[in-house]
Length: 254
Image (cartoon, rainbow, N blue to C red; front, side, top):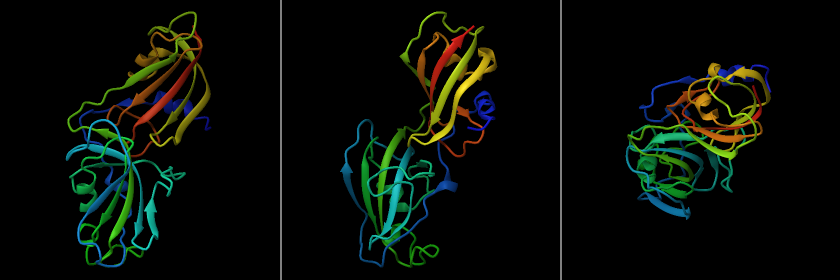
């Protein structure tokens, strides 16, 4: 862990909460299969999901794997067993916004958290007559397996949440306390984006609003899981729109 990790934690900055989560720069490399045999978009839910169904305008955070019709993989942040690919971040898209191929915009409607949906996409709803790059031939039909990690409804105001997993003992943290902490920060796919085994004695007031508020009431030995949706905070070094979770433990309170 870099010696600058503590600076990352202290450099959380509150940003606007009303922008939809979308990162078109991270859009899947788009591909297809030879050629023209698929006449309509087909979807198959091969793993069920739970909760509210995604609709046009909603943001979904996903893992995906794209192949040609002959099974050749051309892109993905998920392997064939639906596990995250090391080094690849979750991908976010606003359904119906036109930032991805039409087969995705149409095929993601109705998905739920935890679901794996398999889309078979005709080239007319993928990359058309021309294809894309070296991996996607002209008039290429595509297959995608897409795993839904999170659905964020259109217009929902993102809220930081905190869940206590151990209350600890002794003096409770107040806004005037100083604390010694340890933490691990992860994305929805479990990728660790930051970790620190000891943060030196630090005034709670010096921590950013949201994180500092979530520590109030914890005691020495206490633990909390704090979730930061996109649009609530920004970590230095974190790119794109990501749900971030920090598992924090209080080592001391002064």
